[in-house]
Image 1 (cartoon, rainbow, N blue to C red):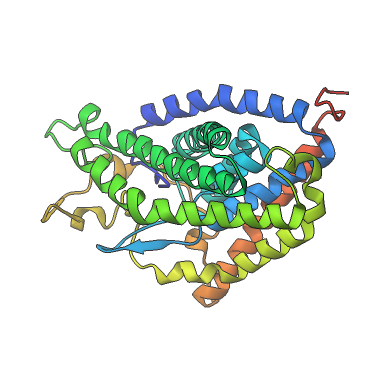
Image 2: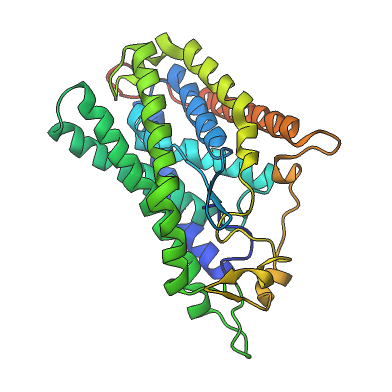
Length: 337
């Protein structure tokens, strides 16, 4: 679901980035005023879980892969504004350091995965948890909310892909950016997310949610004020997931819509290869990432994957510690002191 560089026009990227500015501004303001400063590093843990979850690529027949995001999970535990910031930071680190998702497309990726997913997922969770009572009810609510959230996110990404050939074509009629219209982009994105990838999000969300509740003895919404009790076990779980990230290498192939400019001409859709490389894809702006594809020269792929997970996790934690140091101290009523 990470939209790569040059699949969206610069105009589309600009609009999506502009749309995220007020979202980020409001989220930062609310997090700083509603979450005590000493609890802000918990957002770094949330960002780390999101970062690591996206490294576990899951395959489906046909060579396409996908992954969980964890946006609804973080929203349930820390609130949707915290989830927005946590997932945004995870996506920023992935784009800048590892080349996973385009830098110009950062706003679009955040709109899909850090805005649509956590806010919608949280709203559905809150509504369902009031209707489905009991201990099992909140897990059922979390499962449904996370499934709907990630599929809504995938749908928006599909629309962003699909409108490109409608709006941006060369004089010869060839698409300048993503060459697949809505009739292809929506079903190709949604088939995987309505099945395997949506299930992966459900499993990740409910499993980690249940674990956090068990070790901290908290309900949703109380995690901000009491989750420190379960912080050590949660960090152990995070470390275990980091050690297991090489499992994501078992999924071969690229996610739909994430092919390189050197391979898109050979991509077969509905039995026919595209046959050309869109001009914008071949000649667009490129960011040279420091550790492309989560790899280190001279290291085995598995070792490079683990080291990349360690670096990404460390950056998530460090950035939110810095953010916590700049925050206003809040009292327990949620008012800024």
